[in-house]
Image 1 (cartoon, rainbow, N blue to C red):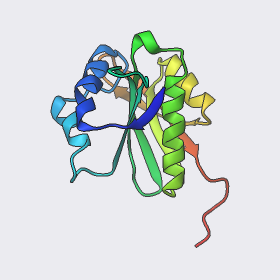
Image 2: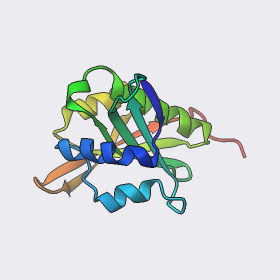
Image 3: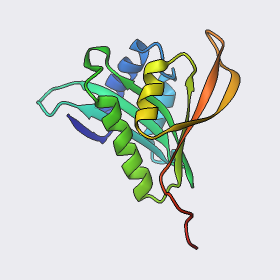
Length: 157
């Protein structure tokens, strides 16, 4: 499995995966197209894909590279590819890129009931640090806030 940066050619497959996932953040086609625009805020869009010719995108991750805190905004793995470590590989690549860029931490929120996602984040060093009451709609549900520190000591100026 190869983890790489997405290209415009991947957007159709990324959008198809997102539509099939009940737990994904559901964005419009325009929002997905804007991810890779030259004038977009710093976004990291990673895809997981088999190395075989003509293979489809098996998963993707979208994060925003802010200053010190980066935010993991969306992660989806095709249902038939789940439980193969693809989501962990995407998260590990994000951690590596964020750390190399000097980020102090990565933050995210996840539905309280999304146990598989919470296990994924916790197994990759994220810790729950808060809650947003009624954050999600359809159905209404709390968000659990997670953070993963990338540096164990303060930056020296």
